[in-house]
Image (cartoon, rainbow, N blue to C red):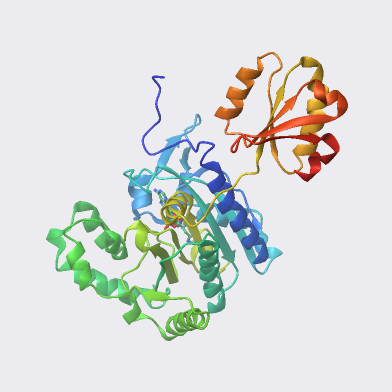
Length: 411
Ligand code: HAM
């Protein structure tokens, strides 16, 4: 095969799928219990949606988007994240006219042109939630604890919640100014991209990966020192609810997150096993995003969880055993027994997996298949079936016995 795969994308082969199903099932069930409804938005949207929402000065928009022109010359982009599409759907469908609070979840592929490495891909999958219409700090706590509950249901350990507050439109300008003044002293050290950010959005310098900037970030002003009373009160309450629920967290005064829309609470969930750079969950509040798109003033918040990273963790921590139902292989000795084999398979498929062999192949070949398929049992369908009797062999132990058809249900 000479056609390979582009870098950073991968097949999810059948052996891996049980992990995906497990995560999706656990998450769906929890989302429904917290009263979220599923939404499926398109995989590509107008580029402008992400430029406006995710933010012009973010790494995502500046260098990571898969943007292309369609045949009519319109600029489209493969979604790099789920939040902007959800807000667009909220506005286009005027959900705000009928629902004071809208809670939705999504599961699906996202695309970012990043340098691929373990836990970082160009096509990856997120499972996320968005809540529109609630501004109270309780909901920040609920969103964070829902993310933690998903991870704990998957038996993950060593979780760390990192949390910070970025303030609001009222207090952010003073912080922005302080940050700008601080980095201005080091202007000559900044890369051209960071110099541009200094003018347009100095907050973004804080997630610069430039080696020279890392020590400078240490002494940079912190958003927590600039919070107005309302933002401070909001943040204190979120922290108090987390404490009361015994959820361990760490205030990370330098956490700003790589997207422009955040206000107030931002958080990430990391584990020691993934390495510092790789959060498994990231989220936060975005009280001005709906307005940015021309909608009515609507507070919002949410999170997204990276499914590939989560699977890496589940495998590393090895606390979850994926079990499939037993596989029965029906070895058919004569074509005239097909009808019986189908009847038997119906009974067995109530609780088990069944593979039916080919009567056109010798028994020896069928047994080889059964072995290669990793069957748990082989049932021989031969002339004994005329007396309603079957011979069954446990493929793992080699033990053989006879069983009457009416007793198959008990297997
Ligand atoms: P994000 O932090 O950009 O936030 O992504 C969330 C999660 O997606 C990350 O913590 C990570 O697990 C996963 N992820 C991101 N990029 C990659 C990649 N290249 N390869 C593998 N996994 C990746 C958002 O996307 C926001 N929309 C989250 C949000 C929702 N905020 C509010 N609502």
